[in-house]
Image (cartoon, rainbow, N blue to C red; front, side, top):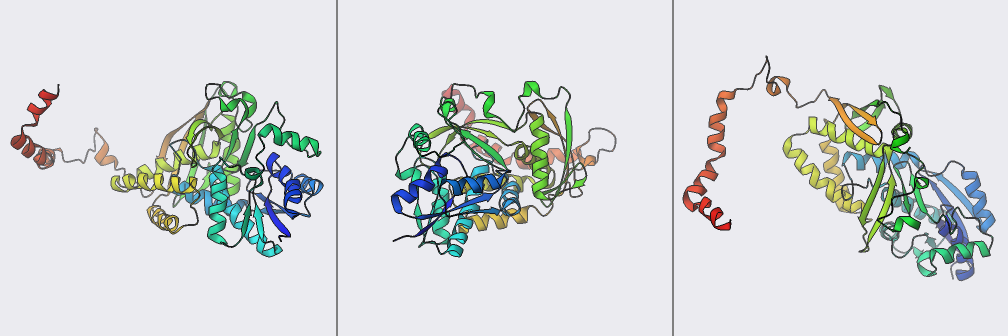
Length: 405
């Protein structure tokens, strides 16, 4: 019989209820593990809450630097955005949390781990596939998937046992946040016709309340990694925190997305990701200047594959390692500075420079100093259009187009 379980503990509704539920249903001593990926400020209160609810031990692991350097920045280098909108903040944190769950279970001699994911979300897949990859014999318990309670019933359960939770029936939002972004679900947000109420946003100002004059920020990159803001060198954690504050003040970073979940349903997701939006735009702008057309085309394919892989919980796979190797190689010359303009919810690239730029003024200009040999163009067009002319002469494509009309 099991004696100890390590629970991925956030202090939210499901994981707070799970502490008591695991004791009731499995007679387990619960070790609550809170992982700091930039999601809380007062971990002493979170730790104490876990003990008060019934955990025998409450641990906090500061994983912010690991999260940034080994998960966020590799994803940024790969330009990963799920379905063109979601920067994958929550999805990126789950494999790291799974790794720490496995590590703590080994340290504490626990033969099981638990998470607070429901049976219709993506996170259950991300946690369990990652845990199985790292420790196939470790038992996994998913209380919120097993107990079968609705969100309202879970809130009632918490109230019945005096478990303090940060949600009520009138404000039932499910929120997850880390350095790379904040996600909000449930309540009125489940109706895709309803505009998100202002109360759900905490990182970003309403664009109507943002400064009435634009702000500018310059991001310096080294091999695809952001290293400076306005010429000032910052570590990864501080740089992202600074950009979240700066861009959020201008209302940048709000995302309202109808998303295709891995489990086969569509869901309405609200995200706040100021730093992610700014950095992804800046990084892509620098790549446009330093990568060839063929590299950029292939990078888009890799980005889509990488994004799906992360979203689908397949971080700890050989394919992810293979893609990462290509991305690392592609970033060799993605070094330089990008200037962005922030204004009332919008973020636009307005300048870029690089010592490895493929932009050649002498070739691009139409003014004095033009070095492009325009006399070579007729021959180029002749050779380039040869297959088109050959097919047109042999197959009379124009007559086929007339028939189609």
